Length: 206
Image (cartoon, rainbow, N blue to C red):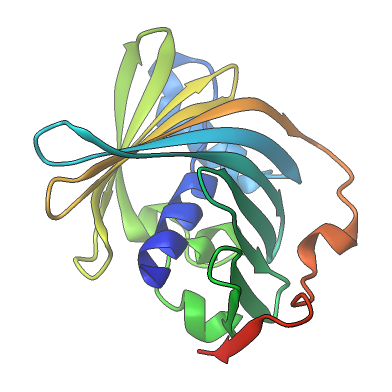
């Protein structure tokens, strides 16, 4: 569950492109090259292989390159994931437990490195322009490696910002994340990307 949540987070923060349908892939590369601090509310639905909704969640996220992010699930349960550049913290409020790992170890091989100045987008994914549907410009991303949790990612964008992210895993489970009120070119306080375990919670070194 820990690795699954991480990859979901990383992929959800990775993708973006421009508004021109004919240039969706090129616009994705351009947005990636100039990514700046951003924040967004989100809602998330998980569908099983038969299309039935098995989980609904919502929350808020913040991202600051090259190596900081904060992802907060607020409904139906509280969970906080923070990367401060050196350590990755995962706080499960209901369990009163914090898991902490070295960021490099926890994120090895995960798409988050593309956000942090790692391998180029095209080195890890085959990118396909899927044109326009439902008012959004779509890009299809197929991982070149078979080691990840997801076999397919699709991003729908509007006016250069991601609106919907769809992830499909090897078992046919599909996760759909919808972003609301996304803002970028922000000044986000450094404290947002720091985490101190609350007093009394169990801290587990991963």
